[in-house]
Image 1 (tube, one colour):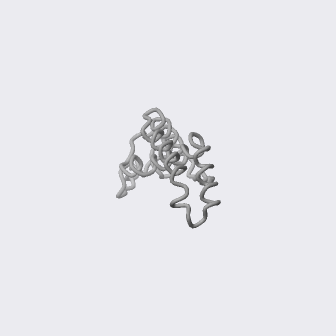
Image 2 (spheres, rainbow, N blue to C red; image 1 turned 90 degrees about the vertical axis):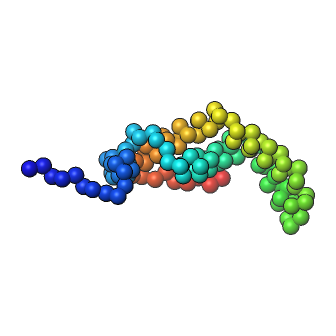
Length: 120
């Protein structure tokens, strides 16, 4: 007599897999991943890899201006926003970040080990 499959509230692609964290080979994305997780990865990646000069200039201005940074750093803030917006709207960059997210999620589902969050 075969054992009955364990029933869960979650769909099989969210509760299956080697450690019960979901199917590592599933490439479907939930709404929260599309609207929150991938844009967050894009923002972090753009700040570090694509717009480091603008980030550095804005941070320098803020440190020098202290409380008056709202008025003093408009130019640097606009340059930073422009650079980040350019990369947010780049479809190739979005696809690259989506693939990176799927790879990290797959590894987490396979191993159960979370990747440490890197803070710049």
